[in-house]
Structure formats: structure tokens, C-alpha cells
Length: 211
View 1 (tube, rainbow, N blue to C red):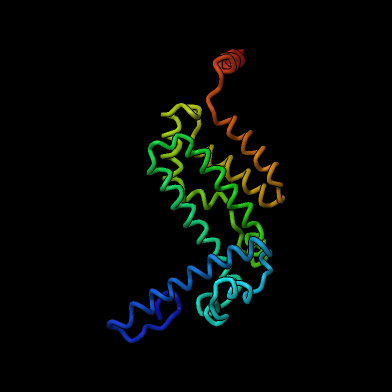
View 2: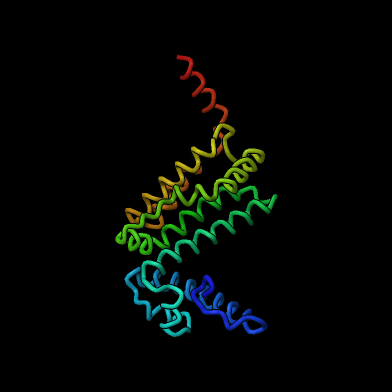
């Protein structure tokens, strides 16, 4: 079997279409699962996922034999998409606000898929934002460096500090089911702390430090 759980068609010219079809089906199932779980919660049936994807229930089970495996795959697919989005932001040198957009996107994905993460936790699989951000560190480092060069964030902000703060806020938002206005306010406060301080505030801090 190939990695999608579909037997080869016997090699030769007939093998590639089968694998391509399997990849398309897998992608459709994951897209459908993300939408169904977001709408109905992680207790939604696998049948509902199959119906949304337009495939037979047996096709879903061939790719994902158990519900936890499907949930895990949805999470990994989300992370892969987030990595691709971060890479695209890094590749756009004119996106001076990309770092802030990235932070907001991490919060959005976590909030939209809270039900999936909660259901996985019931199976013993903990989804931690900090672990996901570790995989994104190269992109985070570049986005932060570019933001500093553009003067949109404070010069003394370290990547480890940004990752720790963003992970803590997003994890808490997921765990406690923060409302959308509360999430936006939390991000606003985080962003205010990331931006360069006014000259007067910098002088006041320096004065306090000398006392």
C-alpha cells in the first residue's frame, strides 16, 4: 500500500492516477472534516464528514481508520497550512505588518478548531500551541527581524519572548473558550506591548531602572 492506505494499481501507467486520486480524496476528507468539526463540534459523525467530502464512508475509513486518527490529521493539516502561510508572509518583503497578521492567524486557527483539540485531549493527545510555534520558529525569527527593521516592533523583543507570550495567550483562549471580542482585545494588548515605546515612556523606564 502507498502512504494513503490505497493499494497500487499494479505499476506502470495505471499506478499514478490511483495515487493522485487517493491524494485528492484525502485532501477533500480533511477539508470536509475541518468544516464539519468547526460547525458541529468534534463529536460530529464520520458519516457527516464523508457526506461533506462527497465520498463513501469506506473511503474515509481507508484513509483514517479511527476518529482520533482523523482528528490528528486535521490538526497536522492545519499546522501545514499555517507553515505555508507563514512562509508566504516571509516571502513578501513589502508586508511590514506580517508579524501581527501571523499572530492573529495563530489565534484564529486555535479558536476555530478548539473542539478538535479538546476531543484529542480526551484521547490523551494534547495540542500545545508552543509546540506548533517551535516548528514555525524560522519564519517567526524572520518576521520579527523584518518588523524590527521596519520599526514596527521594539528592538529588544526576543523571538523566545514572542513565542512564549503568543503561545500562552492562544492556549488560554482555546482552553477557556474566549469570545471573539476578548480574543481581539488580548491580541491588541499583546501588540501594544510589542510595538516601540514612546520616547517619554522609554525615559521613564530608564529613570526607574537607575533608582
